[in-house]
Length: 123
Image (tube, rainbow, N blue to C red; front, side, top):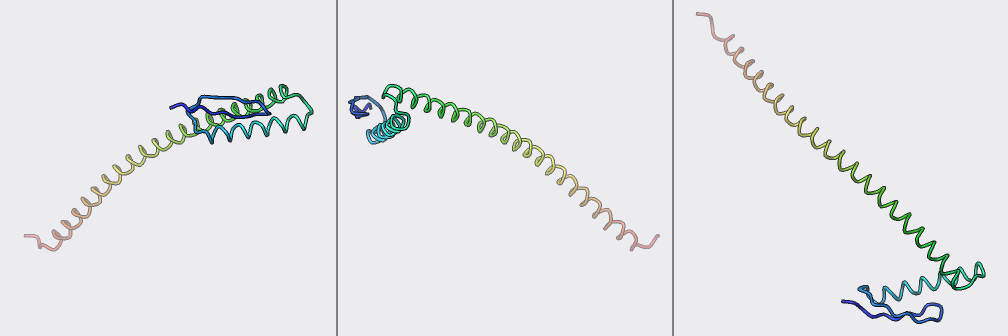
């Protein structure tokens, strides 16, 4: 459902239709107005120039966030591959342990048989 939200930014009304909650949009509008006012005060520029600077800054932040997400995604793929390889190695090691335990059991049984044979006098 779309919400119709009216916000005021730098004295001008803007009406939007959005799926976001109105309070979220109001918060964005307050943040934008604060950034615009900061740019206008700090650099003594017009609202239009401040808007362009804030927009460029927001796009820069967005691009950097996307780059970080891609790096994190790539790192997650590497970790997943390493975890998969570790699972394979674990499975191989478990099979090897099972084989070795079986061999140990065979050797122990052979040793028991040898001791029994040694106890029986030759006929």
